[in-house]
Length: 402
Image (cartoon, rainbow, N blue to C red):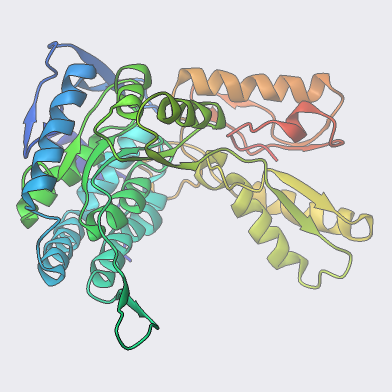
């Protein structure tokens, strides 16, 4: 695809009309309490908007409207082809507004516009289209039985589903969750991360424009304790899908156990190794994959290869290639399409990542590359050498550190 210039992206950013209300029953609305919270551009620290700060009252209303829409069959009882048509229209509207979504995502999350334009937004649209096309192509089954019996396997929507998103891939994780849930006929309540609420709200607006009935896709903005826990404990939510930290994932299992034993799907943290053996042939290709797997999205990725285990026979040669490639990754304004690394999500996370830079050196790890913070939002691509008993080898850093 053809990217715009830095100035063109800044011009689009300056003209955006950012959504600020929760999205319940087909319309934007303030929180019942009237409270708001500020959302900031991680790269500049400037406030982007005041977002509705919802709580249990708003969750109760959204669940009520979602249940009403589900029981009435506005979506769940539509013919599969009609549900498919709506989601295809949504994908087309997202394609038409792809540049706007990419800029909004970059501003809200600190992600580079290059990644938003070439990965996040296209993959989001593809995910919606894939599940739309699957609606009328996944068939039920008739099991073998005797002549006077019939046994059938039927797939039915589970009901009202809570979808709790992370801040590292706001649009893509939204699609991964609403794609299958809406394709199945469920009514959903999305809880975006409070750091990155904007694109979920915009997609909900586009979904209504595409013809999704009211009450089917609701977006409740707010904090984890006020909104996430309320969804996890709600007696009329049939299922929750959560992507985020392992500690919070454990809480959703607890919430389900203490409420209605709702089904829970978790995608939690990781500390993933990349293993390179002595018979690796193309070390240039290996280095390319290692650098991308470790530093893509600023390392804010639960599947990042944040540990590298290399056979001593190829270690020196491979590390030369990795360090050379990592030095080519430019850091700076996320709206500049020439930059590879953007800003970390917020000040708290920036401080956490920076603390691990200090812990690594304090534990005796050898610094091979980087290791420095730039300003109050950026961290250099960093490579440490050490052993697997060090904290930096065992704990998820969620930053550009391998």
